[in-house]
Image 1 (cartoon, rainbow, N blue to C red):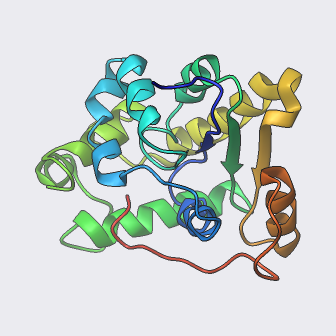
Image 2: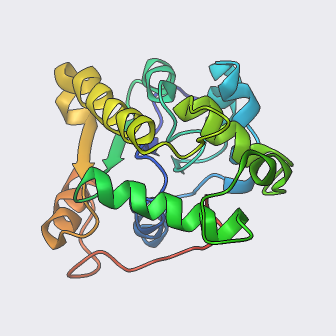
Length: 212
């Protein structure tokens, strides 16, 4: 039987904010992580705001990161259903750094040229399922089809998500930690937050080109 009060760790930072590094930290602490491929296939449910499906999936393991856990609003449903859960919000040094990182990476994955992927390329990308890439950009950032990587809109949503998460947990400050994986001191802050003894003297570097 599932127990609501069991340990849960959710990394709720947007993709390209060091979430794969956090995944490595959690794995090294022998935490059971959810199957990322299975989780990412819940993107359509998130688009419909069907958080029940996401909550049910979250019963399958201890720790989770990236889609759909990194998407706006999901953390509210998770907090309501897992009252003892802890949340890790990963951020970059600045907004431009995050924007440039996600655009460069998506261009490498799905564009045939040096420009960001077009609507056609996103809709035909076969990551997890055909069109997930389009669903992600369109439904998270609400950008127009003729300017899918509009810098103003992407950064606006990135900052809004971070600000909203911080404000939501303002009255539950012991449940949220904001982490920058490029800062050595944040590794020790994270270990303390998780009540784990540090295994390294800095974040273990990890990069996985498959994530979006």
